[in-house]
Structures are given as structure tokens and as C-alpha cells.
Image (cartoon, rainbow, N blue to C red):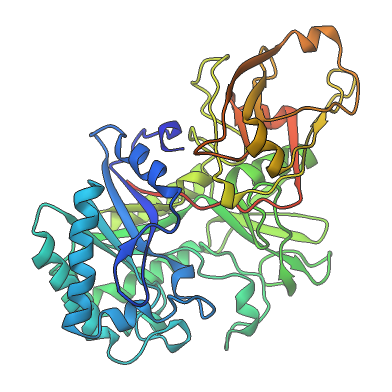
Length: 458
């Protein structure tokens, strides 16, 4: 939840994403349960500017009812007014200080666009600025690839917005296999040389560099390699890397998942030279590239050299050093016995079994529990936690142990009051120490769809 965020060094937070009705063009919540998240987000300290993001990559996926919504909404003054009127009402309810439009991508027919989008996007931002005035910030996400960038009027947008965030990540992925001119060859998704090339695309328009945020990512993308003996930059892959236990998505691992894999498997990694300046690690038939503090430092140097306005991080919920993470690791500054709860609304969770496995079996036998959504709804939700040196807690409704636990371990449990399932139903993992990931491995079966909550700008 937002109140677990580590806001150190962050100037702006963008809550991602609100949606647009494809018929009425009114802005709204993606889910009614988001209302609680919005209100808690807006209660964060005033030292951080709190924005709402609208759209997102999946918003224009071909199988979504919103596939053409941006294009159609921006195509006429009447449609744009319906949107801006609803946006004004939305901002009177939720007091965000800025709006970030993530339209991916204007003019691209595969993503619901048409030839009129280039001019219409500018008119949309002009209408938004006129309706909202200068007290509400405006931002727009822009692509790093010329194929998409040629359909965007950068100078026209620049006059209306506070920033343009260029998405200089996800430059490559398993989708390269069907991309003309690329093919199934291993490439990192945040290659520094390609980031530099992407920034060069902007300067021909004489755009003010101070309005540009350079996108950075705190997750990695990877592949399943064709031959184990050829598992490095430039080798052939057969598909995306295997899904992680936290992100649960093929081809992507959060920073904390990568750190845990390196620790558990005793892996060595290296920095790809020759201009890429990004980490790579391989094991079995898997290959992942990602940025850590050192390689991100190279990108920040580039941003400073180009006099950019800032950097845009996607996404704060992947951050292993922050207080919120779905890799069950929280900020090291939290007190030993504190409990931070990561809650998932009922529509995002269907858990039948979660198990913890201790690295040393003699120290901690492997407990497990089973609970069905129906049982949770009927019985409410309770909390049990390991404290002392284990620093882990688990939000559950019922426990069944598959192995005995010694009295000394049982004495470390803390039982908290039951929370009745009136407005919230679900299960959550919580931890209060960065060392928890090295003590426990969490396996989730029977499906957990994790919503992406927040991205941050700083």
C-alpha cells in the first residue's frame, strides 16, 4: 500500500493507471477497490507531488475494449470535451496535483492509432491545459524508437506540458523474434548506447532538454537460450525467460528477484562492455540483463551530461531498496518488530497454498497453510508473524502445519486481531527486514495476479 513507500529522493509519484470509458470517454477507476488506494496515496506527505497516470501499455492492447479509445477520444472537440469535463470532476474528487498521459502509441495502427493522432494528441493536451489551468501539472510519455516517435509532435506537446518522459527501457524483449531487422538474438532492454541514441532523436526538434525525463527501470528482462553454451549478448533465444515467483510474468524479473537468485544459486554476473553498460547473469538456460546502482549511475551521468530535467523510474513496486515490494523485502531501517502489510484486493488474488521453506531445515521446519477465498470471506483475516531473527509475517485466515515446529520458534509468533472481511478480502505477505529474502523462499501456487500500483518520478 502507498503508506509503505520509501519516498527518499523522490519528488513526484505517478499512480498508474486510471482508465477511460471507451464509449463515454469519461475517466474512472480501473476497479472500485482502487478508491482506497487512491485516498491513501493522496495522504502521502505534501513534500511529494502526487500525480495520476492515465492509460498505460495494456490500455491499447488489441484485445482490450480500450484499444482505440485514445485515438477516438482525441479525434473531435466534442469527444475531448467529454474527457476534460470528466477529468475536472475526477480531480475535484481526487486531489492529484498532476496528470500524466501514457498513450502507447499515437499513429500506430497495431495499437489502435490512425494518421490523425499526431495533430489530435496536441489538441488533446491543449484542451486539457485550458480546462485545468496552470495549477495542475501535465506530462506525456513518449517512445524511444523512431518508428513511433515520428508520429508525435514533440514541439507541439512541449508547449503544453511540464515534462515528456522518454521510455528508454523495454527497448528489447522476447518480441524481437518477430520484429523485422532484429530477430531472436539476446539484447538487453536498457542498453546505454541505445539510450543515448534514443535521446539523440529528440535534439533535431530543438526541444528543451529540461522538459525531458529519461526513463530508467529497476527490473530485468530475459530469455530462454537456444544453447546453454551460448548464453550471452548476441546469442539465439527460443522465448522469454521463466516467470519469477513474485512477478509471475515470463521475460521479466524484479530487482529483488534477481538479487535473490544470485544469492540462492551463488551466481556471478558481469557488466556487458562495448557501450551497453548493463549487467547480465546466466544460469541453466536462462539469461537476464538488468541495472543495479552502478549501471544506473552511468545512465544518471548521461542524463546530467544532456542537461535533462530528471529521470523517470518504472516502477517503484519493483524496488528492492524501498519499503514496498512484492518480493517480500522491506526497508532495512524499519524496526525489527514492525509489521508492514502488502494487501491485494479480492479481484487480484486466488491463493490456495503458500509455503515458506527455511534454508536450514533444522532451524525452521516447513510450515504451510491452505485457505480458500470462500473461507476468508466467511471468517475474516488474521495475522501471524515471525519476529526476532526471522522478521517475517504472513496475513492469513487459517494455518495448517505440515511439519512440527519447536517451542522456541512457536514462542516467536505474534497473533494480531482479526480483521473482518467487509471491505477487503485477500491474503498478504509482509516482512520487516531486508534479510528476510535470504531466510525464506516463497512459493505461490494456484495463481496470483499482482496489480502494478505505482511508478515514480524523481
